[in-house]
Amino acid sequence: MALMGLMSCRTSPKAEKPQPANQYATDEAKALLERMAALTDRGIMFGHQDDLVYGHAWKDSGRSDVLQVCGTYPAVFGWELGGLELGHEVSLDSVPFEKIRESIRWVHAQGGISTISWHANNPLTGGNAWDVSSDQVVKSILSGGECHAQYLNYLNRLADFFLTLTSNDGQLIPLIFRPYHEHTGSWFWWGQNLCTPEDYISLWTMTVGQLTSRGLNNLLYAYAPTGGFSTREAYLERYPGDNIIDLLGFDTYQRGVEQRERYTQSIVRSMKVLEPLARERHKLLIVAETGLESIPDTTWWTTTFWPTFKPFPISYVLVWRNACDKPEHFYAPFPGQISADDFVSFEKLEQTLFLKDL
Ligand code: BMA
Image 1 (cartoon, helix red, strand yellow):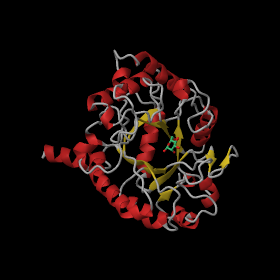
Image 2 (spheres, rainbow, N blue to C red):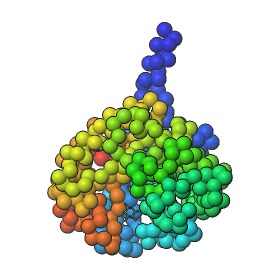
Image 3 (cartoon, rainbow, N blue to C red):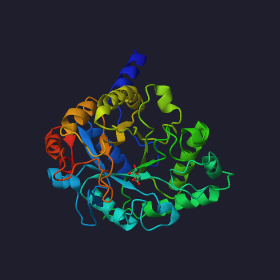
Image 4 (cartoon, rainbow, N blue to C red):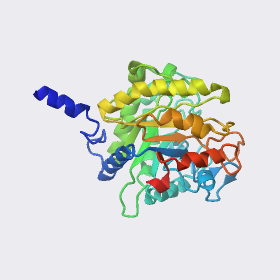
């Protein structure tokens, strides 16, 4: 009987509130996780990378393509810190970090949520995140490696920036940090064929340890391999651990209109693995990066995106950036784009959550 009682308690999704993996998490980080969990009962939050800092054919004008199309901002805002580790003032996508800081503060004051990606430079070769010419990079960063001190310096520069992200009352803004993503592919120096599972996990442990040692207990961590996995073992092969990760997700893209079925089926397959895993471990479920570049499909939002994600208890789905300088590189519509009207219908659905719904 006692066992049955315990089991029914454990299997009830409402029985336990999600707790941050970090036992010293700030009240704000705890509250963010609880709020995100509560919001999944109402729907799925829409996220967009770099929404406030540039968009399709504009920059520096304080707009938002999403706002211009549907009258409200995304609920979740993605930001990119690549270049900060080198002491640069602008990101690898040419956004001043000062602007990212202001934007994160603004988002927080409006009740929105910020998530941060990091295409970190390759410390061993001096190349960028996509430099996969050496399979010794992760090794060189770990304790005893030739780049260890240099990499701690990278992390300290990130920490210095994170420590300035405070709210009006002086508290550290709770944030979702998602480093070392898409690592089950081999296009970044931390990818599958470039390091062992043990070294990849050590990279995470070292990173989180260093940021935490700087007092950053406001960070929630998201784990996002490349989509397309179909077993729990594949998903967990390089998982840093329940004591580090708060959000389970993946990155996946639809490559062209003709790949619609492939995209939707792969998401459903991955979600069927992740949904029970997240429930058992009391983690939140996210789709960290997705989209169809250029959206050459007038009803993509209501006939592909929404029917695919809707059945699952996902906290947020984030679409990638609308580059200002690459006319084809956009993932959210802008006024006049062929899927813009459909996006308006999508925003009006009761279970799609934008900033005004939070
Ligand atoms: C990629 C592309 C690049 C960009 C990078 C980091 O997916 O959007 O143009 O530099 O992300 O944001």
